[in-house]
Image 1 (cartoon, rainbow, N blue to C red):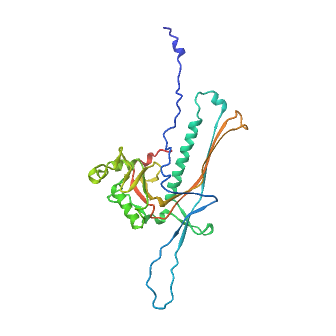
Image 2: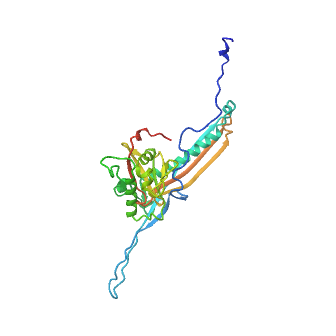
Image 3: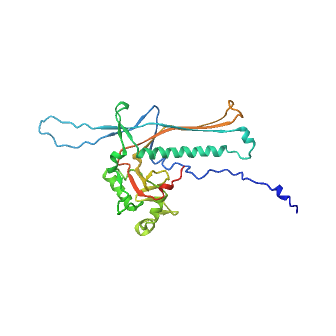
Length: 307
């Protein structure tokens, strides 16, 4: 055999093109209230306060009155877009057509944006008031003491997600008069939270429940909570914020859910194809008590991977 055969060595590349590891679907769409809007801002809901039945003032006495207080919450849109160009000359030099995967990557980015808007709004600043001239700001820091489960709940030091914390969250919501029989409840945690639950005997043992909690090795529902897993929850100092909420606790406003435009650009050299996607949406925290904060120890917080 010729010693020069090595000069004929070739390199073969795969024609398979797939997305890198990333979140491709929205974890929260369908679990929150939604609506479509136009204009620079919108009020998705108005709340009417409570009144109390009072004894009559006396025989033939003037009838008194009680004035219900009304509160509006507001949502404003956040605009996002992505623009990609695929050069026609470059396409001639490859057997792989990347266009379908580039569109899939943008679709995944849109879905992540929905979740980011909702999670950010959950613990962000909510705008209240009659109209734009009289807005007041409701920061989460100003109300969190009433609607938070501490990282040390049920333990001497910060602990991960526990059954005790989930029970406490239900207690807080029920005390706030959330109709837990009529509302769908969602608990958003992450991979560490799932690991915490799987290591608790109350979760994995059928001795504590009349039906199995695990479905194909996953905890999908526990104590009335639908369990959703997301790696986009905020963290600080090795403490992860878990997001328990009723459907009426978060709102997603859609100005433009998603618009895709694929066209050839005759104004650019090479006549490239332009893949343009735009969206406009906003989110707002609704009435506190319908949404809580549960703090859980998570030593993996420093190694978060995005997207």
